Structure formats: structure tokens, C-alpha cells
Image 1 (cartoon, rainbow, N blue to C red):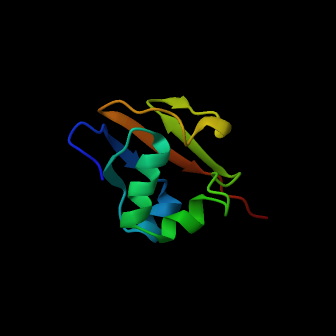
Image 2 (tube, rainbow, N blue to C red):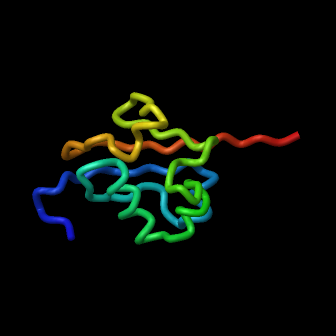
Length: 96
């Protein structure tokens, strides 16, 4: 359970995930990006399938940016958040 002291962050999805989620931007709470993502997955469970592997790590084509800085893939879930942080998700699209 989160408390009022748990940082608030905004999570923004790319257009390809907006259609799946039904929202563009969501306020989430979490001490880490991992907790913030879990909050988003609770609201929109289908996002977990589109964004993460069975291990819980981000899929290779998903990029996480915190306050304009790319978060290294190996540290995404443990990256600490501060109140007001902005998390932007990018998803590569490929085709032929």
C-alpha cells in the first residue's frame, strides 16, 4: 500500500500503446520506476504483456526515459523516483 509520502510521477505512453491502454498520461505512485510501472499495470493489466518479458524486465524494444534521460535497461526497475518525475515510455516499431 502506498502512502502520501510515496513519490508521484507521471507516466506517458507512446501512441502505439495509447490505443491498447485507453489513456495517454497517468499519475502513478512509487518509490522506484518498477513500483510506478506496477501501479500502471494494476490499472491497465494488458500493458504488462506489451511492455515486459515473463521475467518482468522491459522488452528489448521498450525504452524508459526519466526526466529526459534514458534509464539504462538493467536499472529501470530499481531507479528511484522523486515527487514530480516524468516517465516516458518509447516503443520501437518495425516492419518491412
